[in-house]
Image (cartoon, rainbow, N blue to C red; front, side, top):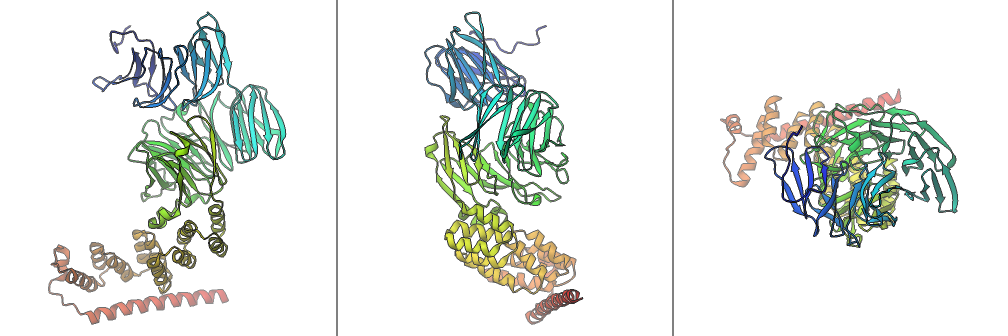
Length: 640
């Protein structure tokens, strides 16, 4: 039964493809491509795609990219808004077929006596010349390891994807045949052959482990011993993605997400409503030692966060929600669970960072950069790199945005990235080596300075003297700036003072000296929090310690007049002090009082500065006395 007629036109429709969400249909109309949403009255997107009639289209649900092939002898890659991402050189004959691999990493192209395997960005891995006539249609197997082609001479051609390659440090693994891998150690040129019972579907090499999934089993090899892998049976069918972290790895298949230890022990399987594992990829899932992050496909502004050990939602179950659609996510790999950060790129190509632990108060999502196309965290320390427009940028200590945003530009390393041509992609960031794949498929390796990683190591083990010595040895502003931010984050104000002095931030050195002279531990803590811009937390600490005047004073210093008066009235103390400072402030700027609350409380009040100063001195003396009595009681406890 005919449900509805989607389109009628004067030209034949040679090819049709469903959109990833099954809400749109892509079809051909001569030299035009048309995307028609199924909702009535929705806007139709149409553009001229080829100089000849378009013969074949395909739309991938994982990467949301479109392929087209035409009689102008070219194949092209487009995004779902019709923007061109790649156009091939003209071939000798019309391109008669194109087809995406299920995971969206590869696609196949068929023409007269021609079969080509290409990367999702368009460049070609391999070209075969079978005597088949034109290949009119191509279908991939579900696991993405082989294809079948319908040929003009009445035959069916079968092909297998081989020669896939994985690299990590000094190891190179190559899939030589469907069931055989070759491992080469480039340091001593030792070669090992790995044989499998079934054909290899997916593999991943990282963190000193090679994880290989075949059609039925999963093999885990350690780089220290290639002879005795750990083998376990897979729950479902085809694995579509393997992600590794230092302690465990994650497998994705059509049925769900499974986390295993490198000993083969099943750890957890996170789930959320409407989860579709078939359309997740390395950009939309991220794994660290304690956290799993997954981008929601139904609402692309949301990121789900799960505990790795239990598979349950992290913290109080709050989702991470952004104002725009998120394109790519990445968790940092090192450090404590409480400090875990997630970086992500949104649809405007802005790079943001935020904390993963989301208890109660809303965590800040802070912008780190603009026009970022690809990003990666280092596997050895929390250093982030990304390709920004025409620059390759490394954020040596991204946490600086939470500590002292002013010095963030001083903690960056930048270099020109125009040599990587258009649309390069960061493949890996291992140690201090970044591997970038250019648009033509070639790999470029960049080495960054090893010193920031050593600094991270010293700070994580609280070796502050060694950290200062290292910065003095290297004599670089970026190192001192990183150390300053790290010291403030770890509340080591002595090191922070040295580091800020080295980068010429004199006002901050003076403020640190002021903090050091404060009488009580609570006051020091509150001012350190204020140094990092955490005004509310600073106020809470002072109020909990009963230092009401100090809480009022920090609001006066920051000209938060409303809050200062609110606290004074609430705790019935120092109302006259707040009014006196307010009056002084208005007199300085020659203004009249317009705030109704201040007018109300100031009526008929005579301000006596001598009296106020005496009260303030009393508060300070009280605080000193309190802190010294605390100190002596602690000492007594120690003696006992």
